[in-house]
Length: 241
View 1: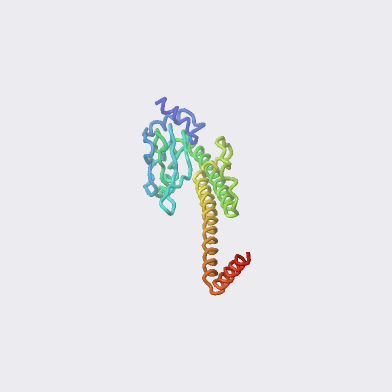
View 2 (view 1 turned 60 degrees about the vertical axis):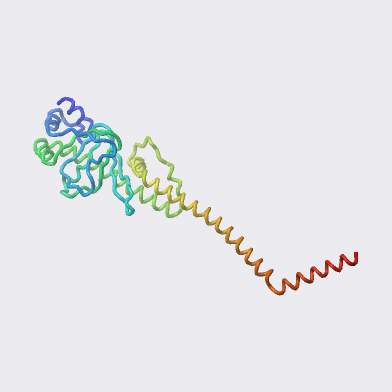
């Protein structure tokens, strides 16, 4: 029991709760282990529990229009995933995949609401956690909007400005947009490759055009007559010498 309480104290959602509240919570959580690349849940699954990350880490992902994976966020020890489905009664909006061997504490929906009824102070901690998520979401949206504007203007200077020691929500939003970094780099590289290929193609076309123009010129009657006249003049000069 004490080990479970120690784990719960690391969770941002439950920081500041007295030990008696954590003892009640410890009785309701279930320890689970996930291997790397194993899904805690998939987008569209029915949400009936939240997960407190004890060790390891997870990524929150969605599929893009081409079926590729787009990472929306990364979460580590002390963070909670899957809590929104407990409130809105909607299917999971994204998939959560373990990025390494991961240990979690699972809290079922029924047990969670029992806890809120028994300990209203948990609700205040939850509100604080959700407010933090909203602030981060706002920073994420603002950052994505600003980067989209820069890309539209052809400015990729932000791509490598990735600070691993990020502290502010804006900096963290930048880190969470790592997949966006990759996309922007990919677009930039494709543009540069296209320019190089276009230059090569232009040279080939110019060379082909010059050859065609030369062939057309040398095949005319005028050129043939001019060539014959040049040959006669050279012959006359040789005879005089």
